[in-house]
Amino acid sequence: MQPTKAKSKNKATTLDHERALAAKHAVRYIGAVDEVGRGALAGPITVGMTVIDIQQVTEFPELRDSKLLSPEVRTELVAPVQQWAVGYGVGHASAAEIDELGVTAALRLAGSRAMAQCAVQPEAALLDGSYDWLSAPEPDLFDILADDREPVGLHIPVTTIIKGDMTCQAIAGASILAKVERDEIMVQLSAEHPAFGWEINKGYATAAHRAAIVAQGPCDYHRKSWNLTSGAEQAQGEATTKKAK
Image (cartoon, rainbow, N blue to C red; front, side, top):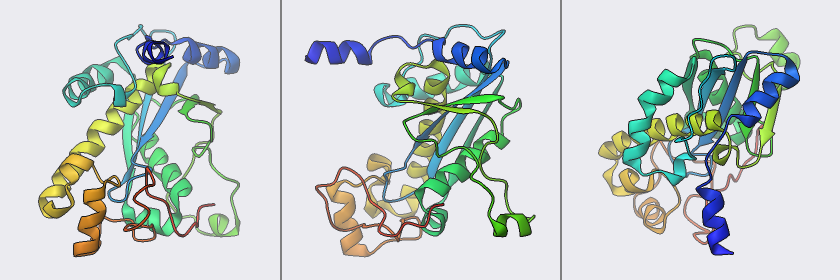
C-alpha cells in the first residue's frame, strides 16, 4: 500500500478540472483557491488565488501541493506561477479577525482579499477541500444596512475538489503562493517573539510552542479564543468559541 500512496502523491497535476469547469459554465477565466494556516495557533489564515485564461494557458506539470515541495523549491516557483497566471492574489485574516469572526468567516474574508488583488477576475472557481467556505453567504439585515462593510465572499460558481492541490495545477499554484507568503510572515513575527519558535513551527501546535505559551502567555498574534495550551495530542488547534456565519 505504501508505494501506491507515494505514487499518487507524486502524480503530475493537470488542467483537466480547470478545463471541465470552464466548459460547464461556458467561461474563460478560472480561479483556483487554497488556504494555509487554518489549524495554526498563531498568525493569520492565508488564502492564495490564481486565475488562468483557459483559452491561452499552458500546462505547468511541475506544480505540486506546496506541502510536498521543499521551502527552496516553493520559493523558486513563486515568480513562475505569477507569470503563468493572468491574475493572482494572497489574502490574510489576522488572529484578531479569526477570534472575532470564527474560522469559516475569516477564511471567506481572506479569500475575498485575495480575489481583490487579482488583475483579472475569475468567472468560476475551484476550491481545494470538501466544504465551500468561499461563496458569499445570504445577506442578513446588518449586511443590508451596513453599506461600508468590506465585501466578503464570491458571487461566482464555486466547485470544491478534495485534494485539489494534488491534482489541479491552478490550485497547486495558489497553494504555493499562499504558503510562501504566510511562512515569510511567521518568520518575520518570530523576530518579535522568538520564544514561540515560529520560524520553525509557523504557528502550529507543536509541543514546544504550547509549552512556550504556558510559560509566557499568549501574545497578540495568538488566536485567543482557541485552546492554546492543552490537548497537545490534537494535530491542530481547535476553536473554543464558534461565531462563524
